[in-house]
Length: 390
Image (tube, rainbow, N blue to C red; front, side, top):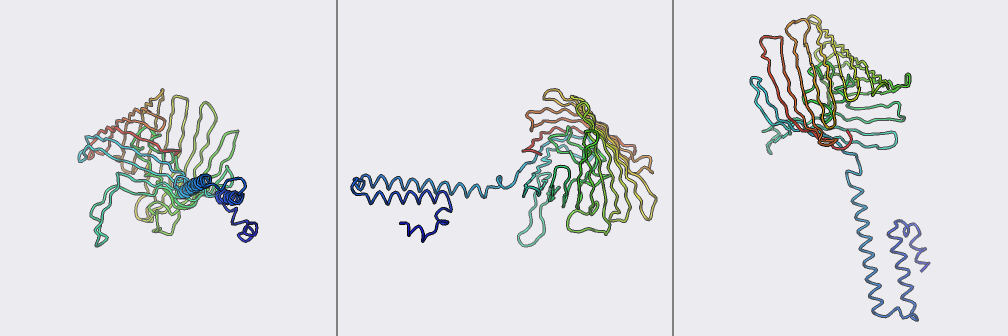
């Protein structure tokens, strides 16, 4: 028997715990068969031993199958989270109909590859996308909705104080552009100027660095990107966008934070753009006040310079499961034209059925200085859910 063990090799025998247990059982079983004086060779005892051996083999097969399943279980490979929201939209705007809208379904995939490396991806499915093409060619017959990779970056984070991101990330600007997930904001409609003065996303490299000043954190972002209008495979101009964001959070009351943002680029139409923004958030529980102001100076080669400007102020009040919010929005797409101003007045009520399930109702009054555009009203009723840790 020991010669057999030597021929097989210890490494192969003890490769798996289940194999080792089966091997030991077989050795004991062989020894028991050789002891005739004890009477263990009787048929009944032999059948019992054979049955136990078969039962043990079945158990070990089940354990190995479970190990194989866990090895390829996606939830074990990456952390999955996300959010979804559905709404009913009513308006008296000319040319717009009332509608049910499956607005967002966003999935986040996050994986710590090693201690210092992480992969993060956000894929957004907006308006229940559906695309159908003919089998004989690539012409799409039916197209609706949007599939969008909103974020996809590889992160290097050797220490807590700083990290590097390579890929596509939300442009670090203000507050709403970064913290905009619908289960955690009181309205379905975002402030008017958001995504118009600073780009929504950036493809490039970002470095984040945190400092401690007077025992409070100062968070900074610096990034280089292809610029607005160039997410994806092609950069349509040779210029690169450069931006930065600072945010200082003071540990006074429940929290006061304020900061500034900047972005510079020359776009695909060769227009030089410099965007500036300031923001603040005051939290005196249960009241939160959040404000942003942004301005972009546009420098076209063949026409007069102009500025587009926007701002909002939002106040919210939390009481038990309820949140009450009001917001004032203003946006001027061209300050050289006195009738370009647009205003929105918003009132909203949220009810939190659970920490990750919220029902919303909001009213928006939209007004325009341009006499050629009629003012209109909106009512939106929605429910939003969060999955996992966003």
